[in-house]
Image (cartoon, rainbow, N blue to C red; front, top):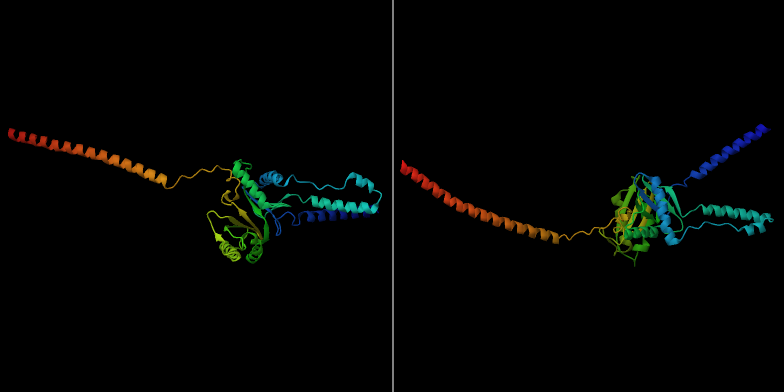
Length: 319
């Protein structure tokens, strides 16, 4: 009898471990369609990048949204009052389990992006584009470096399947708040594909530009200093999309570049004129010196041949 009990315990334990493993890893740690968050690129150190990202995001999220609050269950007084009622106790236990499940959905969660040197931070109950812009604005103003391995922080406010038909269909409604009449503006498209070869860059950009033009013909492309930038990041079969401001000002949302002190570029015409004038003055002085030297040499040459002639004449008379 004890042997039968041991076998049943082994079987149940084995089933429990297998079920727990599948529940833990089944697609819950990867970037998927329907998610929102932030794509963060780094250079060969994803673990340190993740730690820096959490510190940076939590610091500025606390400024915008306040500290993250944990979900709290019922008070101890209520628990003591309801101990005798079994039905209420069961309902309370179910509520606590549901609350714990919600509690696991934290403000930031690191997921596998599907590409090397890129991490995806899934966000919950906040606007990722507003948060990232706030971070870059502060870094640009203070010029204070707050990370070592993070390169770019790109908000992801929408995701869809990474096929041209799906992207155009999704963007038709996604881009309306910025580009549909009466809204309009100058824009550029920043497209990049990782671990994906079924999308051609030029075709995707051309189709998106045509879509923006249909929303409002007043929308114009500006590759120098656009008002808005449409970011399209494709990783495997997921397309991450966002529309951001100040993309050029904040150095393509690069946290390393945005803290560098801007060195004003000199005027292209004035220095060139000064140099030309200086060179012209130098050339004039050099020409004058050469002319004086040439004149002196000519005077010298005029005297030398006469002496030679006199010498030659004297020698002839002597003979």
